[in-house]
Image (cartoon, helix red, strand yellow):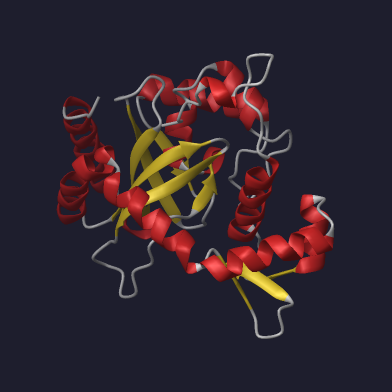
Length: 264
């Protein structure tokens, strides 16, 4: 939910003035959180933000002192700090929809024996908010807090199919990166695919992000347009026609249950 500003925050044109120091802080934190490397040099941060190194260094030291950013002993590399984890945990703990979904996710994992996810649409990506690992995995891996391009995942495609046409034009990149030979990389093909998702009522990720894994995604229409979805992931070696039918039936029932129990 986006907070609203009072009159004192508005500029003369009726908009809201950007607080540059706050915007710069958020920019730094998002770069550190999403960077491909665990640690980022001051020079690269300066280049990515367009902020002079002297000014950026002072900001980083403030963030290090408060726990939002951490640095190595030499002070040359920076990464996200523990305060970000605490904030993210609070988000999960206080999200009403996620709280309602938790027992349903538990039931699905027990019934199907496969990995179950709950995710939310965020721009061009989905963000995983809950995971129930398959009983077949000896070393479970949680995706909670991680992002995937929405067009590559069943969760994301289920949600993209619920958005107005202008959403895809505004949020998705002009070029869709390819992750496997099955990834949809053409915008026209993606639009056709989303038409099929709407017709079917759920989305399928057929090894489009990870080879050997098929996912079934179901949008939860407790908001309009939908922003949350649930999915079931299963290795192709276990995906018989009978198991596929069980997954779709169980996930459909869970979707209906969650939509009836939604929090307004």
